Length: 110
Length: 114
Image 1: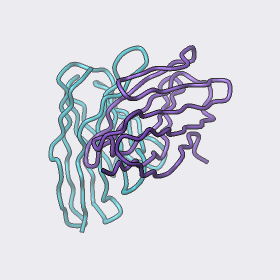
Image 2: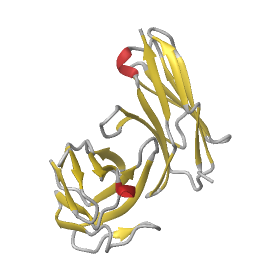
Image 3: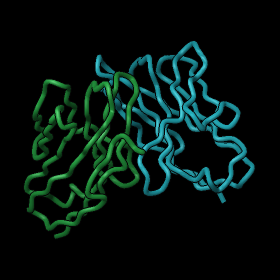
C-alpha cells in the first residue's frame, strides 16, 4: 500500500476557478512534505516544501497546508490559468527516504 | 537551486540494445538520484549515485540492468541494458540540495523500446 495517497486522481476545472488537491500520508517519522508540479514531458518542479512545524506556505497562486496531526496536506490553486494544467505530485520524506504520491492530473479548460 | 540537463531528451531503441543517459548539473552536489516514471505513474527511485562509491539500488533494480557511473560531483550516467518494451519510460535524474534534501529534477529522457 502506498504511503502517500492523493485525491482526486484527475480533475477538470474552468479557467479562473479555484481548486484544492489532497494528500494523505502514513510516512513516519515525518521530515517534510513537498508539492511538485510536473508539466507533460518535463521533470517535476518544486512548488512548496513544509516541515513539521509549518501549517501553511504560499507560492504565488499556490497555497499548501499541512496538518501533521491528521497527516493530511492540501494544495489550493487560486484563479486557475491554462498553464496550471499539469500533474501535481505530493512527496513525503522520512529524512532521506522519500515517498511519492501517484499525482493528481489537473486540466484547466478555457 | 540547481539546473540539470539530460541527454538524450528522447530515444527510440530496439529491444536487446542498451542506452546510456547523461545527467549534468550546474553545481557540485553530493547526492544524485535516478528515477523511472512509467506511463501514467508517479516516480520510482532506481538508485542513489554518490561520487566515489558504488550506487545504491532500490528493491527491484539491479546493477547489471541499470549500471550507473558518477565520475565527479556534477555528472552521472544511467545505462538501461538489454532493453525490452517494459523499459519504455521516462528516466529522470535529480539532485538533493540543502538540509532538507530538496530535490531538483532534470527534464527527463523519454525512452521507447520497440
